[in-house]
Length: 362
Image (cartoon, rainbow, N blue to C red; front, side, top):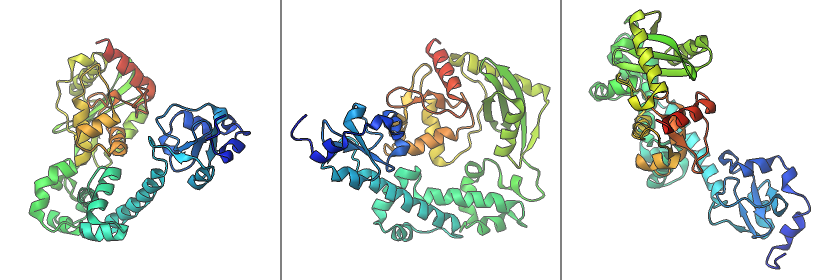
């Protein structure tokens, strides 16, 4: 054993990390464990966060610590690859950004960047960068999304659309109307009290991967859902569009489902139907990047973050992939981890694997 190895680490070697349930999370490089515990390595004299990309040590050479102070107390040095001390800073930033998000959500009027940065105790420039890295949107964009959500709730009960716009925190009705369709996914009047609800046609079919549901509004397909239970897919559609009038058993719409099934079975053919893609500005940028991945190829979450110009927003990219409601048409199944392994998929990892294998052979 090297004489350079701190004695405190060598003393801890009597208890193998393999018997600790946290060891499995280290082997998986589980990012969700970062900030919860750390581990030090006897043979190198360094300590790491659980997701460290370095080669995993042997269990008998690893010691797991509940705090970063315990890891430091062994005399080990912080790993230069995973920056284990940075996990604490990141955790603190997450808490600050969460606090600011609650502040934005509760405010009836837009808050300036200076006010939000002061709440977080950071400079405006640094706060903007931290917020965008964690959330994937700027504070202004997040505020717009919150106001749009409030507007959805007030449009049905307000006497006029203009009244609802100002009640939701918009300072100008003209500026709102410039973005109304992209924010709401429909005309404001369609959500007003007394106005007709959005009408969505839908149908359920079967494909080699199970049950599939497609639904369309006036501008195109709004949802493609996959699963095993047709009733559950219908409930999922109702939950996603609670104010819409759902129209099933439409024989004319069966052709749409057939084309969606064709996309699943033969991905290289593509889908010749318009899509009505609804989401935040950030989500739409992510989804457009996903659609640019060629059939038969994959990309990592980091690749997508770089492609949209936000290399630090990997977590936000993963969240946007999880929010995708247009299975296969927006190919979030083509996104994999950095090591090439498959990550979670809204419609099941088994379906993700089957889709990738099918596209590889296309």
